[in-house]
Length: 212
Image (cartoon, rainbow, N blue to C red; front, side, top):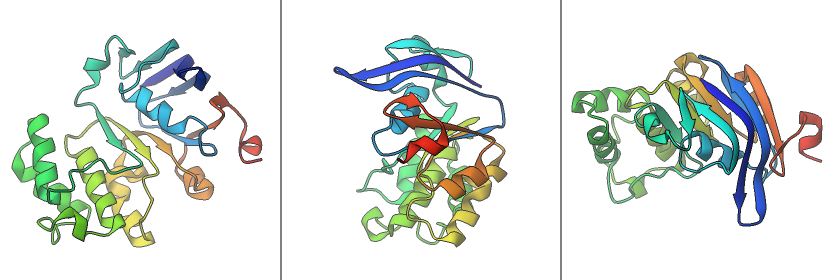
């Protein structure tokens, strides 16, 4: 599903990713750990086809990046660290907009909102919702088009334990999806992981060196 070999990504002169290699097979969850500024979010954006790698090879779902990034459309669900929802719209309106992009029937919107526990708040303005509720809507949007790959940046941020359990069939291990998860929560991340990736200053690093 994912094969990276020596991936490099720069921001000007700064190396955000410096020779990153990894492999994730279908149905596996790779959890990415590292301190702030380690390159974790940059890695997710490369995998999503949103950023071009400057060197190395990246293949995601059979698409060679960056030249075939268009092949990923509709195949990736992305929960960013910021929800990336339209604040002037309700949860239902946000999902309806996303559904139009992927030719998803409106009837499926209600199913997904119910799955994340947001059926009763589906028509409330987004600014009236708590951080955890907004995170649930972001998760609903990520899976609305049933993508085979989920890219999740701090997916449990702002969620109470009940909400984390509620979302397990949606974006958690119980979803059965191939996942790449970025988190600072080491115990929770390790419990989710089939394999782990440590990043420090853009380079691969063992867990024991990440936070010192």
